[in-house]
Length: 199
Image 1 (tube, rainbow, N blue to C red):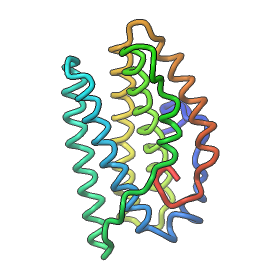
Image 2: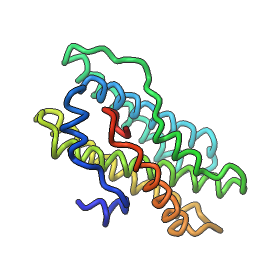
Image 3: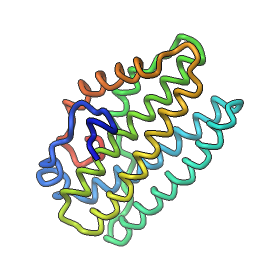
């Protein structure tokens, strides 16, 4: 799977991130990853609360909440198996920077489409990071786990893009997505230095 063709991400993660940063602190990575899954579930719940009239979106988000919380539980199981304890929630500066790009005015449609594209962007980068982890981490169990989750995140990314196209009436989703990709490429330049999923 090529990020350039499928995910359209403009800046790939350096595989040395795994060797030089992640492998020295697996516990930190796992705690951060667990909270990423929990936040993804929270994001899906927020989309339901804000858009109860959009039945397909509600159905898709309900399934997503279940899947993300299942992933949270599986990461937590790995944490416990390794004798760790889930630490406190980590701030996700990458996601907070991405959030600044979401339109806050402009009516309900613009806000919904941006929220869906913001969600797709996080899934796309998470998918790319999981791919890099699965191919470079010196831990066969985690490599297998991250390969499986990579496929799952790619599916979520596609779903958010599809929903954005479904509910867009006045907005050119492709054009807005290109703007998101360009913005994300600027943001991600500052990351790849810490043992977190988006760090």
